[in-house]
Image (cartoon, rainbow, N blue to C red; front, side):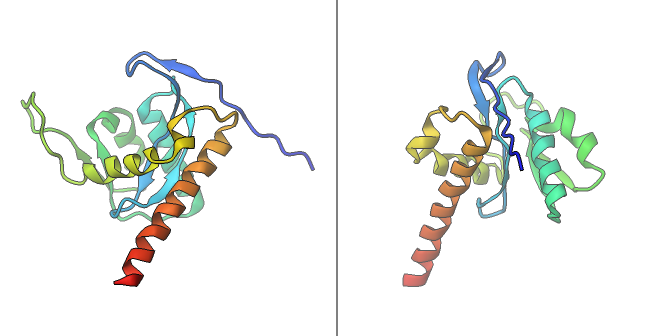
Length: 153
């Protein structure tokens, strides 16, 4: 039996001025990880969202509603309408200033939780599977801490 792991070289995303990899998450309403895919930075955000939603569908997850950021709207809405009800979270029309968007903070908080882990703060993993496993481990630790707090009160 031969196991082949695909390594994604680090690429450059000109729009975000980012070299390395992107980590699109799918989280539940409490911010706990449901699915993650790590891919090269030159892959667009909507293509990354398609990878995450495709992996979720292949795993057999049934989602009630998917909230997506306005940046994903271009490529994902048409693709995901076949199976998942979507709600696009975007700024009010004509608004140019900062606006608090409902439910968006849940994902941002989840990204902040992973930022606490030193191994995830750098992008030095050779394999994308290793990077995904470290994200799962970080969220496992976060979930255990939250459960422990509930049990002691």
